[in-house]
Length: 126
Image (cartoon, rainbow, N blue to C red; front, side, top):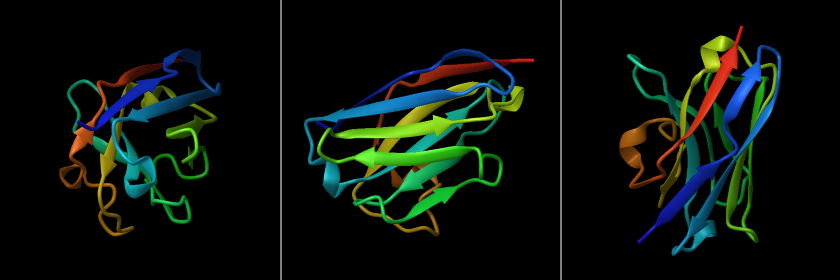
């Protein structure tokens, strides 16, 4: 059973930074592409960023490009999302997800992921 657990969310002021972590267990982490999604109340889920097995290829949504950085440490079975210059529009529940395959063309689409965490809340105050 693939398990991923997110942490690092919280309340931050506009312009601030947060670092999200996603710890994986019970599966071979380096055999899975990973991604961060977010969903705000009343809005559709958005694929924020994704990364391939070795961390060589990444994707960012236009809304976070230049502000967020995704990375992974396969030795520690951990995925990260460094978030800088945060805006109130970034307020959402952030989810970590794992998939057995990767393509930069569709890695931002949630339907391709079969394992999800419960999420960590990020709130950016104005």
